[in-house]
Length: 56
Picture 1 (cartoon, one colour):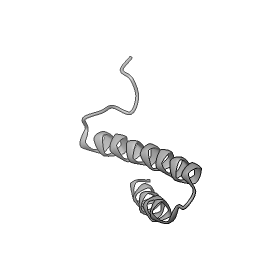
Picture 2 (tube, helix red, strand yellow):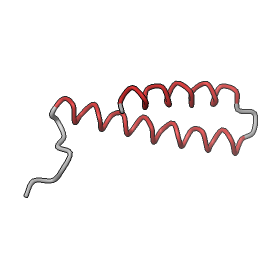
Picture 3 (cartoon, one colour):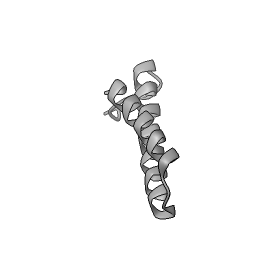
Picture 4 (tube, helix red, strand yellow):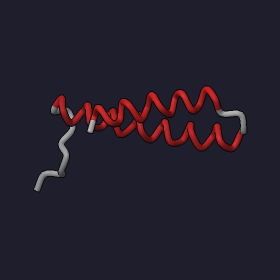
């Protein structure tokens, strides 16, 4: 999933560079921030810094 997120982030960055409408720019920026946050979470999980499930 990490690779797919990295690809999605790059695609969103490209879309952001080409956005001409302010509303479109905001929407793409929001999607980019979400994808970057998801990637950070996955990276932390892979590094063992964050557990995927809460302890019981």
